[in-house]
Every structure is written in C-alpha cells, then in structure tokens.
Image 1 (cartoon, rainbow, N blue to C red):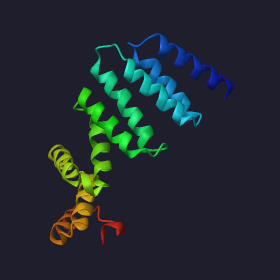
Image 2 (image 1 turned 90 degrees about the vertical axis):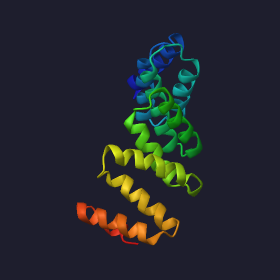
Image 3 (image 1 turned 135 degrees about the horizontal axis):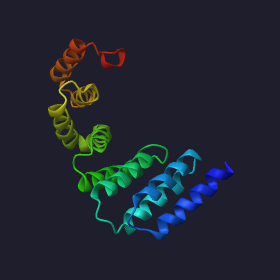
Length: 169
C-alpha cells in the first residue's frame, strides 16, 4: 500500500505540473480509487478538468466520465454525476459509456424521464436489443401508469429471452 500511496502522490504532482496530459490524472485517480480514497480521486479529476489546457476533447471527456463514475458510485452524488456525464458528452458526443450511464441515471428520476426516454431511444436506434434501455423504458412506463406500453416492452424482453422475475411487475 505504501508503493501505491507514493505512486498516487507522484501522479498528483505530475497532474498539477502538466495541465495538458490526462494520463497522469487518470492513473492517479485509478490508484486513489484502488486505495478507497474516492474523494481524493474525484478532487484530482475535478481539478484537472477545471485547469485543462489541452486540445484533446476525447481525453477531457474521459476525465469527466471517470469523475461521473465516482460521483454516481461511491460518492453517491447523482446531481454532480449527471453534470459530469453531460460534460463528457459535450466534449465527446459519441462516448458510448457516458451515453448509457447518463440515460440510466436519468431513468431513475421522474423529473428527468423525458430526457431519459429520448436518450434511451437514441441508444436503441444504435442497438435495438439493448436490454438495459428496454428495462428502463418499461420502468418509466410503469411509473407513468402506461401499462400497455410496459406490457409491450415485457413482450419484447420475453421474445429476446431476457425477461426476468424483476421484469414482471
């Protein structure tokens, strides 16, 4: 663990010294996560994103994506996670993992269901058998009391062989 701490500290220093390269920030954050230092990992990524001086939008998107994963997961800050996923997609609209994660988060919040539906439709346009999107849309339909739409979604899951016990509400 001492080696990890020293390595994480070195990556943090490298990140502070170089606001162009995301490699040190991502590696440092990864080590901090492995050590259970989620807040420090998030701070490292937040500071790097704020001070970023490079032109690589894909690298910046990955920084925001990894920050969002921390915020949505161990830090349990969904508002911040949604903002970070949106920032990732602003930098790199085709970042599939961020598209999927944002759609999943939005589906959990009734106030954001319209956007969730739009985002899940976009995902299904790329992959019509994306089970996670079908399940999210079924849950939204049930939440809105659109039972026929939910039954239709369940029929699709059944046809795909993906209908589980939790899908039968």
